[in-house]
Length: 379
Figure 1 (tube, rainbow, N blue to C red):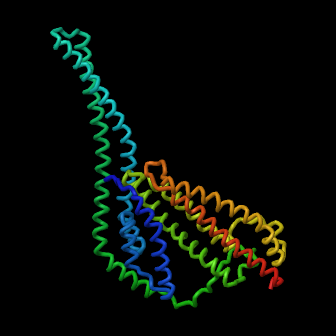
Figure 2 (figure 1 turned 90 degrees about the vertical axis):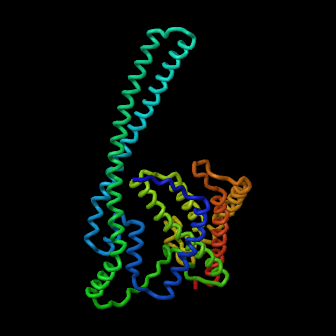
Figure 3 (figure 1 turned 30 degrees about the vertical axis):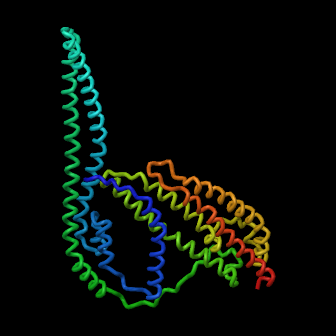
């Protein structure tokens, strides 16, 4: 199997984080306007063919038993690549031993040549060293060729299995329209009478916050910003599915583990954690110690929230101030990571004051609603 030498460019990483959620939000909004569309079976099948066709997933999706034809070839690729990884260490060791023996032979021959250049006869010990080093080189060459032959054997088997998979995928690329059409007809014939749509249930946090259904124009404006911010970064989780999928395939099918997947994803989730905190607060999804809180009335809960907001603002405003200074230092220094990938760190650290500002705004909204809720006697 060929190796993959792709390293994610920095511009592609940041561009994906910026643009992918916008495209996803547009497509979701478009689908909501149209209602529930018909499943794009052929498009989905080709998507599976492109991203996971080597495993026959497109055939499994179309419920074709010919998908099982891919399984033995895929297992062969995985097994042979595992053997290649095991043998590769032996190849490296025998090659290192061969280079060491060649260096010893060169040194021995240089000593003999030096003696002859000075019109002196090489000693028996020097001649014996040349002979011994030459024999050692020949022995190491035999070991290296044997290890290389085993490596090439398993590599060739993996390549042949991969070529068989590629041939099956090429055939399926032309056959899929007909397979999808027949599958659509089978589903239409076997479809039961249309049932009434299931009721839509909107989950609203933990239900502890008494002001979840309380609205004012000002607080709704603040919460609209946090809802959009939370929705925006939520789509980053979809990116991680594709990225980790690539890592698994590159590692186990192509023997090419990456040096950027882990770092890119934990940085992405760190940024998501910071920016989505305000949305989680708006939905009442943060951890709450409610041993006493849950026993209070709605008005009592609002009063408790007003009192505890003092500690909330102490923490969040401190986070905003210190996070801002931390981010400014990173921006001024154009900070990057110390890893081989060398991604920019300053955009990551900028999310600290941004997330803190959003959660402070959400805290202001919550405090206003609590005060109004209490003033209106919980009505």
